[in-house]
Image 1: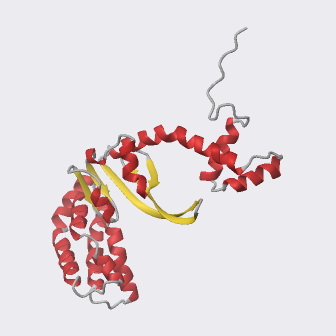
Image 2: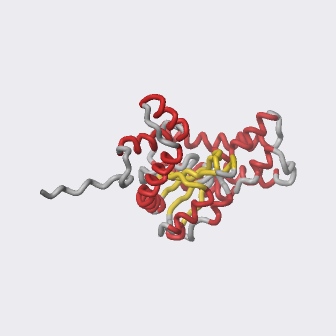
Image 3: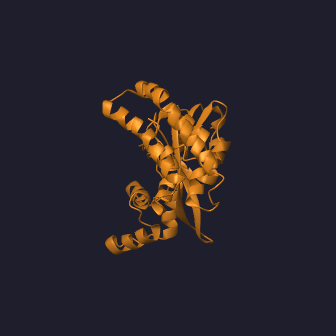
Length: 264
């Protein structure tokens, strides 16, 4: 009698079923249930004693198995013609204690993937997995974070975000509604936003929006840029206004004429 080979398992020679291993990962990352809490729940509800260290080993193994999938998703994302990237600070518990790091999420509007990875690993990991930003082409839209200046080759266009740029000036106006510098800048930006708002109401195609921006936005962009440059000499270094002025006007102009306020 010959027995058929057993199907491959997530963890070879593991007494736990595949379902328990998968439930552990889903509970940790989808339900945000820490491993130590899962260990207590398993013992309380079904009398199963599994240490946190064992659960941690399961999670690490699942992560290793997913590395090729993540690399494939990253290659497809970077090959897209339009990529959006943003950073979200998160607290990370380490062996040495509580530390604060930054994670970056990057989503491609062409492919359905959204990727998360730590800031320090964003460039390095891509290189390790055989993915190079230098080969990327198209638009990379960010909030103006200067670290992105080092990413991408000559064929990549770095575009900023008008919503992020306006936020700092708007906050300055909230602090002082009569601010002689921030108030007119916000007003002109709102006029720029109105161009796209009207285009959306009329249901214009992307191509038609692009033409409309070229026809109507130039004077507004020139005026905003001149106001920003003039304000650089009067804003206090640590003020909210100065944070708004630090945005790169050229990148914003290029962003709007190419893809509009939101990149669509």
